[in-house]
Amino acid sequence: MDLVREENLVLCNAPLVGGAIEISGEQLKTIVDASAGAGFSGVSLWAFHHLAVVGAGGNSETIRSWHLDRGLSTPIVESLIGWETGDLAAIEEQCGPTFEVASYYGAKTVAGVVMNSEIDFDAAITGLAKLAEMAGERGLGVCIEWLPWSGLPDLKSAWKLVQDASAENIGLVVDSWHWLRQPGGPDEATLRSIPGERIHCVQLNDTTLEASGEDMMMESMTDRRLPGEGDVDWAALLSILEEIGADPIWAPEVFSVSLLKEGPVEMARRIHASTRKVLGL
Image (cartoon, rainbow, N blue to C red; front, top):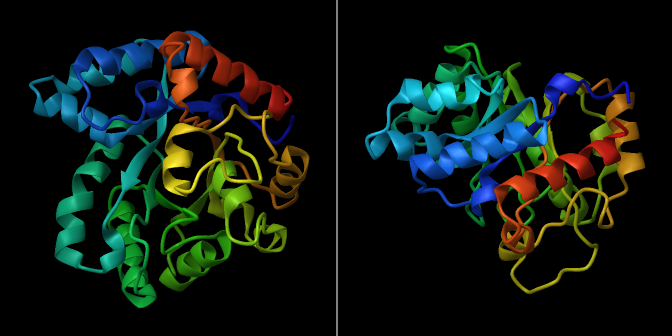
């Protein structure tokens, strides 16, 4: 479809190792190769993975070459955390390495989330403005992802935070799991009100309207479905994104214990096939 450019279809490949933060160089290279082998043009890189392998003695240039040699771009790096406290010194220390990884890989934007169940909104505005400043110094954007179980639980609160931080290089991540499961369900009115250039990334996956367990965060990290195999109304969501002129990075992110059992190569292949089908490619 016209909404999607092939070069913007990349894989969030952290689910290929179950979302583990501490991984070996061999594991990282395996998921990089699986991403390329499945046909993706790039990856959404967890900075934690690069830093973990470097911390264990890996060479930064070698790690980056695993991506470049397979023709993989890295347009987005994840994930900025802890910024919602508004503690500027702590933000510099905690988020600085993630920005450096993003710069090293030539990324366009860096994703951030709120992990706490409650936030001080004014402090979060201060923290997000600091992220915008740090990103701007490096020629990067910042995109914020809401999590339904967190202190930033829905699109409306995430968009208000972005607006109040008052920086042009801040945008949003629209994750289809969180889109469906946010309090009140899909918020089409708010999405229609957002300029398309503020949607930096769309993370594709699927789920059911009804929860499969009592712990929403655990469900999200272990029991996502392939795009098109749940209750997300893809026609409606994609239509709105097209209507507002969005040109995001399309990054399927399918955390699934059952898919993980199939191994990274088959998991990446199935994610690629289902994503292309949903996007009409």
